[in-house]
Length: 384
Ligand code: NAD
Ligand code: DAU
Image (cartoon, rainbow, N blue to C red):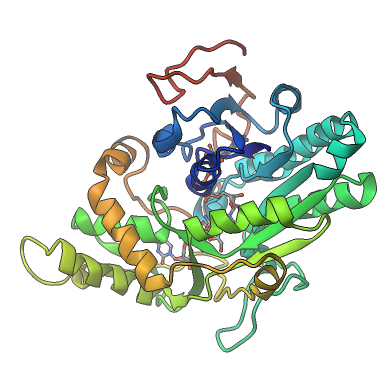
């Protein structure tokens, strides 16, 4: 079975590529534009695998996507490519509109053209799996309620609004043109290779640098945390066994306040890497101005995917967080260059909209043959 994973150099996409490549019956093409969030170092464990190849391209480039679908004889598209950080969407929504909405529209067009040209038996097997978020459902009160698949969409941020729009497009391509789509809406992921703009890796690395640990507002907002490898297994099930036209909620059943999360990280670090000057990392916690439009609580009811596809998470929050903290302690080679060259942890998302340079970035397309020596980035450029 041949997969096209878009956004496969990102946090979740790279976990999906690593997971799928462990199955020798699968072939995986990773299509990624390599924005600030894309990192080929996250594919190091599979970069020389016989069933893996990387393609630098933009999902807005319909022609490039169509060529790749045909060349690699794709059976399943898993669309993870996106701008994903809420705070950046507050500062520069344009890039979110471009990739998450226009990009999804363009890749749907490419997929539809490709699918229409397949023989009937292959058409029946083809899937377009759109990977979405629980944030499309909006804000839950602190004292109850959970998101089910039928919960009406009520996004609060430019990010979640752009993801909601893309979900609607995907459903429309199913209803109108018959494209066999499946969708999944997942809660907050955490784990290895997580870009350190998001709460958990930011707090781990700021603590190791003896910098303040920023907690928005009073730290009482609640998220439902899922270990990224559990999400990757869920995504494989949805893509290969999900029913066309259906969506599946995915969550960890691990609701925590942000302050609970930050304190748990501090306590793990106190044991594993005690501060040189003594005292607890909790002393670095700093309450800062809240995020504009900050949703209070997310909580996922994942009973449909459990019942229909037999999925359950393997990690609980304590075991997953311990694995995550240990991974960051052991893998400075991965995050050191990011903190030095791409993002050092400064505050984002306080509401002054910029015209982000990524907003109108040109569409680029480079093809890389996998090279035994490198990770794809050093490989031969054969087309633009
Ligand atoms: P990420 O920001 O770590 O990775 C996104 C990847 O997409 C990057 O590698 C980037 O280079 C690539 N990309 C961006 N624009 C592109 C374009 N125009 N063409 C091709 N590639 C492009 O994101 P993530 O956290 O791994 O999230 C992946 C997907 O899962 C997103 O669609 C996100 O909305 C969804 N999601 C994330 C979470 C979470 O907790 N992180 C939870 C639920 C759903
Ligand atoms: O729910 C799924 C979503 O989870 C995904 O769709 C998004 O792509 C992903 O980024 C994530 O969104 P959040 O906004 O929930 O994640 P983030 O790590 O940015 O923030 C988690 C919580 O922590 C949120 O309530 C805001 C808070 N926070 C965040 C940062 C970066 C802080 O208190 N301090 C911080 O410095």
